[in-house]
Length: 281
Image (tube, rainbow, N blue to C red; front, side, top):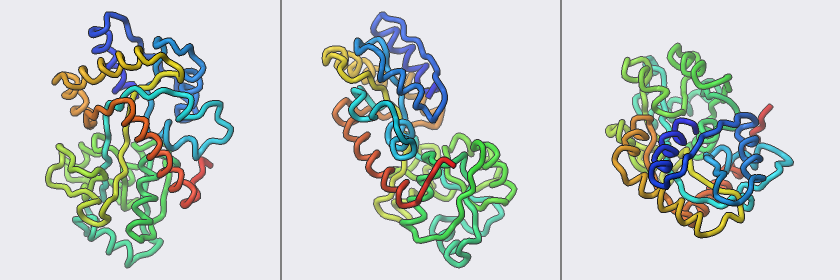
C-alpha cells in the first residue's frame, strides 16, 4: 500500500495545494488502519488507502470488527489492479496451466502450493483455482512470500501464485516458469503468457486491487473533488509509469463503480473463505 499511496499523495499535493501525508498503521491485516480511518472526522482530511485483503477478505476472516468495510467508508476511486502470476519450478515438466492441471490430477494430494500466509489474495486465488479446475493440491503457508519463492525455486513446492514483481528475477533467470496469470487480460510484462480465463477456467479472475476511501459521511463535494483529482493523476503519464514499473496496472474506477467492486469482491471472497474453511490459525 505504501508504494502505491506515496506517489499518488505527491500528485494530489501538487494538484490541490494541500499537503498529503502517508501514515503507515500496520497490524491485523490492515484492520488497525481501517479502525483509525473509520473513527476519524468525515471532513476530507483523513483518507484510507485500502486493498482487496482489507476491504473484501478481512470481513470473512476476522470476527467482531469495529467497522464495516461497506457502510463505514465512502469509496472515492480504485487506483490500481494487480493480476497475479502462477509459477512452477523450472524443473517441473509442465509448460502450461493445462499441463499442470493434468499433472496434478494424476498425483492427487502429492503436490504443494506455497504462499506468503493464510487468507491473503494469493492463497484465496489458489483455493478458487483448485475448486474450479478440480485439482487436489496442498496449501503450504509461509511467513512471507520470499521464503515461499525460495522453496519454489528449490522444488520443495510445485506451485506458487503471487505478484509477478516478486517472481520476475527468478523467472528471467530461468529458475521458475510462469504458466498463467489471473486477470481477464494478459499482463503487459508477460504478453505471451495466457490467463487462467483463456487457458483452463473460462470466467476465472482473481486480482488484487487498491483504492482510496474516506470515512462515511464525508460531504459529497469533497468526495467529488478528490475523485476528480485522482482520475486526473491517473491520466498523467508519469504516475501510470510508476505503477507499471511496480507490476501494477493503473486502473481508475470512480466512486459508484468502486463501491460496486468492493461489494462484489466481498461476496466472492467470503464464499471462497467459507467453502475452503480458511482460518488465520
